[in-house]
Length: 199
Image (cartoon, rainbow, N blue to C red; front, side):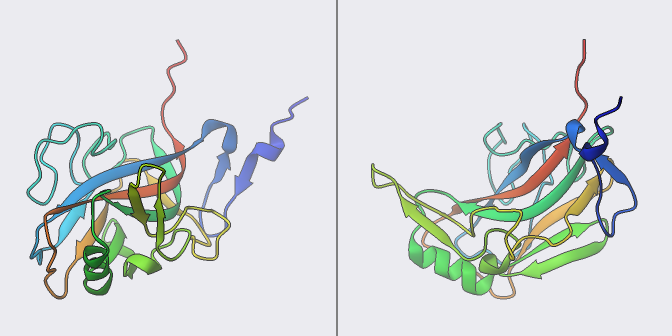
């Protein structure tokens, strides 16, 4: 008797079924750097380890990205994304956060299609800006804690398929005026399927 039927789901708006036992919860992440007077568009997910971190960063390490290929998932990979978070570097000032919040727009594109365009606090994540201080006085900031059931998450997950290009862009209608060069990491969180070595 096959007891796996409850693991197969159909998501409205996506023309296929998904077997949940083939997927894991995870994040695809990509760091970018903003210059003090950043005005040019910056593309996350456009590089892999060993390549240059946009914009003006050094050689990327495993802390900067876990992308297996630039701007797309390779053959055998797929993702159902329910939130997009952006986490600034730990040492950032609140004034710089406010500058980014009031001047930057973020987009997610799949192929040529814009899925959304929004400021930092309106991205599909937990919603709002989340700030907390640890016991050693380290302040951490992001645009909301991820929660797939949140009203600020995607109602229907974004389906990233193998070999289909995607990008997360930072767009600046007016130039930033940051106190220093700042690192920001984009996280696309959801269910991720990738090839499993069964040997």
